[in-house]
Image (cartoon, rainbow, N blue to C red):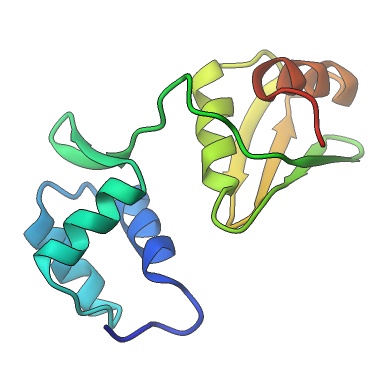
Length: 142
């Protein structure tokens, strides 16, 4: 299996399923091959299971159960309207999914990276209000 720069296979899988409607494993294998990740269907199946990726509503997506333990994170306020959450490698998306699914008041949007989540605070909300919402959803920063 060749790698594409410094991006890991797991990162590539998550990015591809987030940016494409992937209806089947053959399509996913093809998209990964375009990025120089050549693997077997068996290897792909094992990676999808490890990443909690399942086929839902006709395409693959990451499915993180509500009772799944969340990774520890730190939270930095960046006035006037940005909160930055930092977590372990590969876990930024897990935090983002939980925040996005919560429809927390005051969250204008999120942007997840490998180990970081940016949370934009809506115009008429404060950093403190949204921080309190995030801590209710994710638990206290550690």
